[in-house]
Length: 252
Image (cartoon, rainbow, N blue to C red; front, side):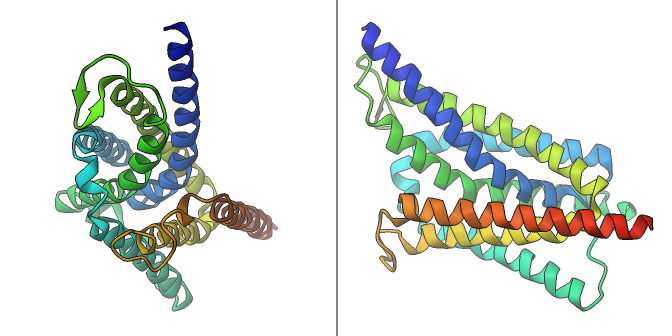
């Protein structure tokens, strides 16, 4: 029993680390979505988004075998992220103002933002849940309880890892909002990251077993992970250098 519990603890630590990595790029998307709101509404939108995400992910654990087959969720999430990223960059090149004034964000604007945060998290959740299931099912069954077609012990590990990931995402998103406020030049970099995350969801969709445009295991392969994180780090570094350079130029 001690060996089994130790194995459970190790997989939980790995899952928390994995959820933390997945939460990092998701948090940038959340930050961009709430950035136009007044500061207090930003916190509320992220908080309500966290509550909704908790409810959805808990429910998703019971329906994971069904959600895996709904590739349209991933496709819609990918299309939306690519749309807002391309639109922002296009508007910026055309000289249009992207940000929304605080007066225009009251009432329906606030709740619409919360809805967008919720929808984005649903798209992210499928990727996160698949990773959690892939790790948890390697564990030996613990007890006889079965929840949502999954052993109770394995279910508990997935739930704990998912909750930690949500908390990381919530606080990371708040920090990203503060960073964008202090370095507004980073906004374009943030939207490029949003677009790259959209590409990530696109790859996941194209590799779905019902589509088969890419190998089923490709989104979780070492090759794709190195490509994704390598490009993401490059975007962040280049964006940070450009932002620092522009900020210095403004001070001179």
